[in-house]
Length: 336
Image (cartoon, rainbow, N blue to C red; front, side, top):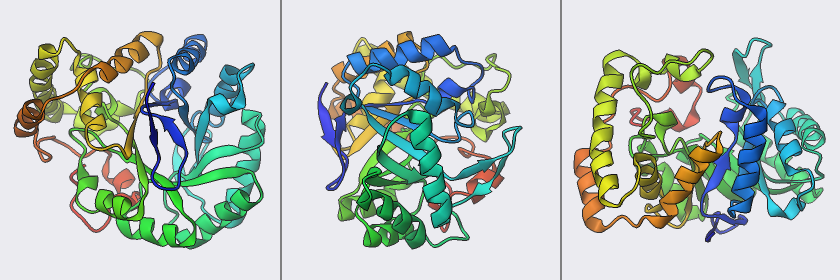
């Protein structure tokens, strides 16, 4: 598989990465054996970037990744870990903790759960509004100097926060939602990252399944948090599924699926952008990998852009309380 470098300061990784969140029940029950087999298939296909979070399944996701990597060379994987999100036993989000002591404590537990002595990219899951980003990044920089962390990343923060963090220590990449129908970063966040030499790892490239070509109004899964998102509700869902049909036509002209075309679109946005695919099963992973065989022409991109402009999506990507916690959404209209 071809590779891309995460910005001017980050590691070289596969041109697409595997996001593991869905393997820990946030999208409904997952099959653990199939999840591990999917991680193995990704590694065998040349995917090196594996993204997890210490709060995915309250540590379950990291333990799952440890099991999947057992017997593999450590340098076969570039492990990205998000930390700091506080949850109660029922899964309710309680806030963010970016205090330096919490940063170092979180890493200590993560290293033990993953069974490794270093993390390739360590990043706060969200900005802690009570702690200056300089203090949080400064604490991770201490861990870099101590050899426990290789690179520092960020997640879902705005352009000003990116610049402030980068002034403390070089930032490898910003992880943020980016897809055909989540394009808010194009206004100021993406230009800032490019000016500073910071890469983008794009999650939600299929808009949590809306752009997968497999979603329908009838689909409802217990314990799937998407059922509470505005884009998946009522008339918004009707409108959004209609948008997918245009993409299906373009994909069909390439003998491709909707999902493959959607990922190929993200890949086309620049060599500094690495899409994360959230496949939980080997068949979905194989479908996603098919995006690497598609090259969208200027005519394709123009047709998609005309039919699916940046403001075409109905509904916000999160509910109002969740949006309020996103530094990336502050100070501008929510267009993502």
